[in-house]
Image (cartoon, rainbow, N blue to C red):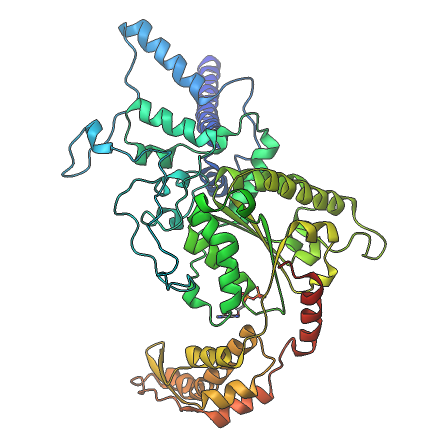
Length: 516
Ligand code: ADP
C-alpha cells in the first residue's frame, strides 16, 4: 500500500516536472525568437512580441550560446545521421492561382546604380517655376532605382511603398543595402519579397544589445510612418515652400545637379511663431520625397531619455543614414539646443553630452554625401546655441499667414457647405472681411477659431439629441443653424492670437541671421 502510494507520488512529481519543462520550453522558444528577431533587425516584430507577452521576453537573455540557428543546425545533424540527407527546412506556400515556383526572369530588376536621366530642358523655354507644377509620372522607364532602395528596414512605411516615385535617388546606396541586394539577386530569390524580409539592423555589424534597444526606441517612438502631408495641404507660405523645395526636395530629386558648390544644405532651420506650419512643411518634405521620416520632439527626448539621450541621438543618425534618403525633424529645437549655460543652475550633464553628440553628428553629415537632412524647427530662434545655428546654414522664416492665406484658410475649414457626421453645415461668411479681422493669427489659431465657430450650432442641438435618446423615439432630422459672419466675429472676440507681438522680433532676427 505504502509502496503504491510512493510510486503514485513519484509519477505525479514526474508529470509535474514534465509539464514545467514543457512550459519552460515554450517560454524559452519565445525568448529565443525575440532575441533572434532583434539580432536580425526585425525590431518592430520583436517589440510586438514583447508587448504581446506583457514584457515577458525582454527581461530574459539566452543562456550560453544557444540560439535558433544552433537549434536548427542540431536538427539538421540529427536528420543527417538518421536519414543520410539534410532536411528541407521550409517550403513556400503557393497562393491560389499562382505558379508554385516563380521563374527567375519574372523578377527582372532595374540596375541598382542606374541614374534617372534628366529630361531635356531649355531654360529660355521653360516657364515652369517649379513651385507647384506636378511632375509627370516617372515610372515609365524604370531605369532608376525604384523605392526598393529603402523599402526594407524598420518596417519602413507605406510612403516608401508608393509607386516608383518622384524623388528616387541615383545615389549609391549604403554598402549594407548593396550587399543585401546582391545577396538576394545572387540567390535568385524573388527580391521584392526578400527585401521586405531582410532587415537592416543586422547590417550594423557590432551593434551591441544596448544600441539595439535604442534602435527599438527610435523605431517605436521617433520613426514616423506615413506623415501624409502634401504641398497642397499647406495653405499660403509660398516662399517658405519654395525655399524648402530648393534646399531639400530638389537635391533628393535631382542629385546630379547638386554637387560641388551646389551640394545640398545638410541642416535647415524653420523658425517663426508657433502654429504657422513648420511641422507641416517638414512632413510634406517627407511625404513628397518619400524619405524616411524621423520626428523628434527635442524636449521629450531630453526628459524621457535623459541618461541615454546622447546614445539615442547617435543611433538615430545611424538609422537615418542607413535608410537614406531620410529627414530628421527636430521640433522645439530651443528646448534642447538653448544657449549653453543659459539655464538656471547650469546644464545637466546628460543634456550637454546630447548637444555635443548632435553637433558631432551634424558635422558628420556635412562631411558625407549621405542624403540625410536635418530639419529643425524653433519658435524662439534667438535662444538657440550658436554652434548649432552655424550648422543650420539655411534658415527659413515661416511667418504668420498673409491676408489672402488667412482668407484661404477660413474658406478651407469653413466652406459654404460641408458635412459633419452626415449632417450638413452651412456657412455664409464674408471671408475677406474675416481675414482682415484675423491679422496676427497663426494658421493654428485660425483653425481653432473655425472649429469653435462650427461647434456653436452643433452645441445647440446637443440638448435635442440627449432628450431624444431618453424617450427613444425616431431620430429627428438634424438641421444645424447656418454660421454667419457675425457668429464668426463673435468667436474671434473670444479667441486669442498667439504671436502678433513677437513678429517684430522674428523679422529683426531674420535681418541679423538670415543665411541668404
Ligand atoms: P508649428 O509651426 O508650430 O510646427 P504646425 O505645422 O504643427 O505648427 O501647425 C499646427 C496646425 O495648424 C496644423 O496641424 C494645421 O492644422 C494648422 N496650420 C498651421 N499653418 C497652416 C498652413 N499654412 N496651412 C494649413 N494648416 C495650417
